[in-house]
Each structure stands twice: as structure tokens, then as C-alpha cells.
Image (cartoon, rainbow, N blue to C red):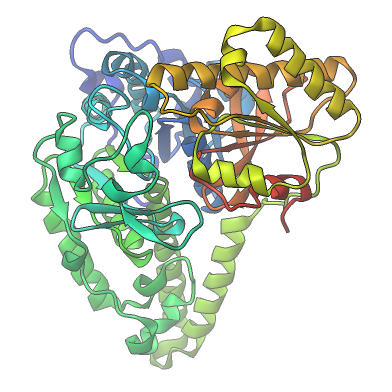
Amino acid sequence: MTAGVGSAGGEAGSAKDHDGPGHADDASSANAAVSLTAPSICWYGDDFTGATDTLAEVARAGLRGLLFLGVPTPEQLRRAGPLDAIGIAGAARAMSPADMETELRSVGRFMAGTGARVLHYKCCSTFDSAPHVGSIGVAIRELRRHLPNRLVPIVGGQPSIGRYCSFAQLFARAGAAPEVYRIDRHPVMSQHPVTPMHEADLRRHLAAQGLEGIRSVPHIAYPRLRGAGDAGASGAMGASGATGAMGAMGANDVAQLDAWIEDLINTSDGPVLFDVTGDEQLAVIGRLIWRAAASAPLLAVGPSSVQQALARAAAFERDASVFQRNQAVAGPDGHAAAHGGKMAARDAATSLFSGVVPLAPASGPVLVMAGSLSPVTARQISASTRYKHQPLQVQALLASPAYVAEQIQSAVAALAQGHNVLVHTDRPEQAVTSDEAASTARATAQLAAAIITASAQAGTRLARVGIAGGDTSSQATLALGLWGLQFRCVLAPGVTVSVARSDDPVVDGVELMLKGGQMGGDDLFDRLVVGVG
């Protein structure tokens, strides 16, 4: 395995070495709890739904990970046990620059102190952010202070959910529909109520947030990855679908790729934006990140495709190791090597999905709280047939405690009768302000928590709950008093079901779906009830 791939050891300095003067290490006791079993990866999600999507990618890669809802305490780390990857779900996406700096300062110190080689700042796949709220530029400036490596890879797309970056321009699908839009012409993101995307060039978009001098690596600059059709005997190494065309490369090709990677690392001093137009490019980017992190821990920025890239690069190393061992046994005819490639594919598939049990049909009533104003969520609400619908009047929810009490009572009564309940906000006649959106997210999250508590007190403890809306999900995890989330399964691309971890027995162990407004097909809410095979 290439040095640094998946390695937690090496030359990581302490957080104090890179923090600068005047920064006390208030996470030192928590860091000490993980020092003996350092993770290889840490990530911070700028909202809760995105953080759970990254948790799913970590689990797919066969890594033991847990998502904490704040810098973990020593006791929480002890209860979690040894971890390969540590995540922290935050709410930086909705924060002012000053609040982001405060939040990320302690996060950066903690994560640097774990000894992890890669710290991933997980932003939304549409990069929606602004200088005054959720600034990715502010996040990079703060977090990179805690890490010695000057290189900051920015992964610009995630093809698995219809996000693409070409010549630094961002494109995205709208929900599950096949059409792809330039982000500044996207029917939803160009009109986002808080952070509308009016610039498709990510270099210009991030420069407006104070991140100047971004180097762009266009997709046409990547070394050509040979497909299986022209790979010859070396194609045996590409049997694992996890690595794609990179797995079909011979030794000379790998050497040329590594030379390209080393040149880029040696000539870059700051943020580098990587185009992503296809999944096969992720293994190249992941290999570059691991190589750079081998010399010094680094910050990587982007959606969950950062984790996909790291996993594909590591999978390639596993396949290459198997291939080389079998070549030594079989000699030049390669027959045993081909068999070894098939075994590598089987082993990779096993590691990618080990421990993931399909989501069974719900054994009791399901509650879904939809606070998202997205058209995608609106279609999911309209398409759902397995719930009793309970629409909310937002103004009454915000202004009338009596109205809130009525809604709690109505939902609890329906759940007690065995009905699944879908509580959802109405769509306003005019655009809402960022303050109104934040108030609505808090109110719907608190309503969901109150329904769950009241239902348990009435004799119906809920075992499965769904929350729709990124801000609502973030607020709901706070209202529910969670301290962590464990991966359960993927319900749809970009939508994860997790197991809630809490000191409250009413909430601990609940299967919890958290989804952003743009994620999932029309039948998503019904799938939460019937399960997935």
C-alpha cells in the first residue's frame, strides 16, 4: 500500500504546533482518549444531513465511524470504541463568519489532535454559501491554521448524486430528474431563500468569500486512464468495480500517474479545485490526497465525493497488492492474477457493505417532519400514500403556543392508533427571509421532538423517524438531545438512515432519517415505511 493511504501514523504534529500563539487546547483531554487508536480521517459536516451522507460513505468503505453532534467528550469517545473515522455534524452552513470561526476553532484543534491524516470539511454538493452566511472561505481559513500542509484540495463534483464540475463550472440535477443545470440557472439553487447561487465558476464564487488564488485542475489535464478494453493482461487488476478504469492500469501507467501527482503537489501552495465529470476521476484525486497527506496532515474540502475519492484510492491499493502477489505466483501468463483480481473484487464488495443490514419494514408507526420548502420535498409529500397528512400553518406555529399544543395532541393521537404521520409546513405565498427560514426550522424541529416525547409518554415509543430539510434536521438533532449518530443504511442517494445515540432512552436507538431538501425520489417517504432490500 502506498505510504499514507489509510495510515493514521506518520508525521502529524500536535495541534499546538500549528495553532499559533494564544490558542489553548481545550480539547486536549478528548484527544488523549483517542491518541492510542488514531483515526485516519476526520470530517466536519456544515449541516447535519450532509454529515450523515458522509457517514454513509465512510461505512461503505468498510471503516468504523461515528458522527458526533459536537466535539466529543472523553466519555463519548470511550463509549464509541476504536474508530477509523470521526465525524462532527455542525451547523456552519447557517452561521455568520464570526460564529463559524468560534465553532471551527475548537473543531480544528480537536481533529488535528487526533492524529488523522485528512480533515474533510464537508460542504453542500451545490456549494451554496455566501460571504455573510455559511462561508466556505471562512471555514478554509480557520481550519487550515490547525494543519501543517499548505495544499487544500477542493473536490468540485459528486457524480453519484448528479453534481459535476467542468472547467471550474458547477452543474447539478434538480432532485431525481435527469436534467442537469448550470448552478446559476438551477431552478432551485439559483433561487435558494438564504444562499442563492448566482455564480457557476467556483473560483469566483469562493473568491467572493475571501479565498483568492484558487488553482483549477480541469478534467482534461488528468492522466488518461485506460479502460478495460485496451488494458491487456493488466486488466485483471481492474476486476473490482470500486476503482473503475484506474484498476486497469499497468505498472508504467501507475508510475506516470504518480509522477503527475507529485508534480502537482510540489507546484501547489494553497487551494486547488479539481474538476469531477465522472466517477473514474475520483480514484486519481483520492490518490493525490493520500499522497499529500503522507507528508503532513491536510484539509480537504467538498461534498461526500471527498470520502468516495479516498475510498477508491484505497481500494485500488488493495487490488494492486493482490495483483502483485498473484503475479509472483503465476508468472507471466497471468492466469492466477486474473483469479486474484476476481477475489479482490469479492473482497472489496464484502468490505464495502459489511455489517449493512437492509432496512426492514417499520414495525410500528413512523413520524416524518417535513420543514423543507424545496419543490423536491413538496413532490415527496404529494406522492406519499402511507401517512396521515398533518399540514402546518407556519405563522400559527411561530405565534401560538395553543396551536402548537393542538398539533402535538393530534399527531400523538394518530400515532397511538397505529397511523404513520407526516407533518409538513405549508408553502408561503411569497419568498421568506433567512430569519423566517431559521425560525421555521427551529419551530418544526422542536415540534418533532415534542411529538416524540409526548408519544412515548402516552405509551407509543417511536422506533423510526424522518426529518426533511437541512436546517430542520440540524435543529432536530439538538432538540432531541443527541450526542451521536451511527450508520444504519442508505435509503436513497444522498439520504442516510442513522441510529440515534443519546442519554435519553426515549431517543437512543431510534432509526433516524435526515434529508436535505433536494435529496431523494418522489417515493422517499413511503420507502421509509416499507423499507429497502
